[in-house]
Image 1 (cartoon, rainbow, N blue to C red):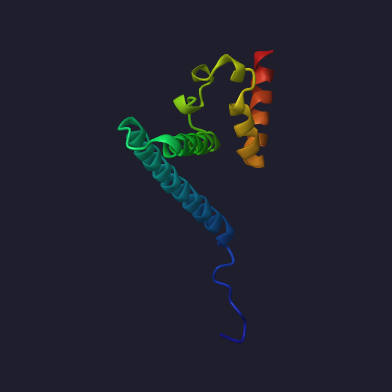
Image 2: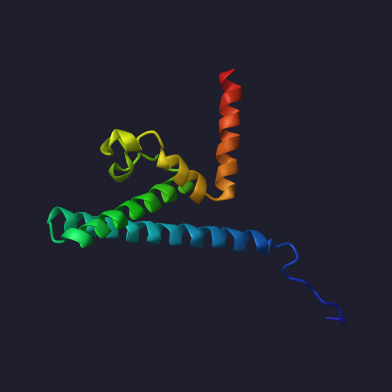
Length: 132
């Protein structure tokens, strides 16, 4: 071959394929994590409804159930799916003294990635332009 190096892959964009693969693997990891959290949330609900736990364990189960509900809420928001506020996070179940401070906004702002925040800011700006 007369001493020249021939690059067979010079026209291939390997970076694009790697990026697609990493996005796909992240999506699968998120789905697995979400399904695992849903299963744990269901198990905690079952234990609480059957009154299998009492006193301190009951309080710890409630706290864990709220933490899992928060995680599921944030995952759904980050994936861009339609999200309803879970019953564990709704303000109407708390006394009136707790309802002045909306913890859901704090959860969203503290746990969302910067890319998703920028996406929603731009999306809202575009919607505002169309409304005018």
